[in-house]
Figure 1 (cartoon, one colour):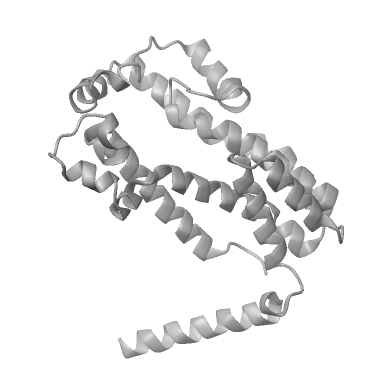
Figure 2 (spheres, rainbow, N blue to C red):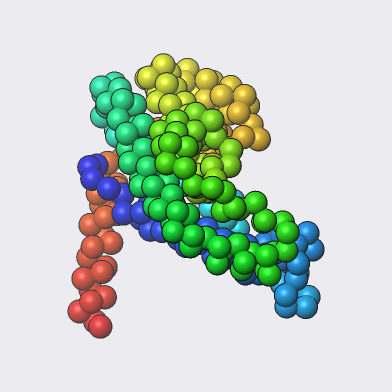
Length: 253
């Protein structure tokens, strides 16, 4: 099986929309996400939203976990398919650069916006909608050297709140989570007893985001296993059936 697995791109897109909705609510209707901890602007409606299954619409943290599971799967899928260690080595060498490019672009754009004074509108909005809880966001003096440090080093090796783009807290986890599954794949990926090591690693990283990467790697291993349901012929047959069904549907339409 080669190329992208398109339905995973679809899942990633749904998760991205979910995170976007969460950030929209955090800025304009924070009680919909955090309940009574933050100001309510819709009577009890936003509090009901946050305490019922409707809250899944803005469950951004859950979607972040989906991103991490997808990373663990995608980063190791080709290795488990081909059983070629050079795939892991090549991916590990290129991982920092692949993550750095979008992070650098985001931080530099934020630096330019802050330098132009455009974040003051966001700060004013947050003071109205969320009160003093988000006073510190975007309230910083832009500095080019500091921005470069955060883009090159801080976002990946320090972590925590990155003032130029707070959502970059995920980058440290993404980078080290990637290295974790690369290392586990190289060390244990071809051992018959690898499942024991997977279990041990899962227990070690229980209650951390790194568990999501391990779960993704586990899915990749199982997906490319010799179990009948995952055999290549069956997958190709399913893909052929899906294509035939789509063609029939298009003709009927």
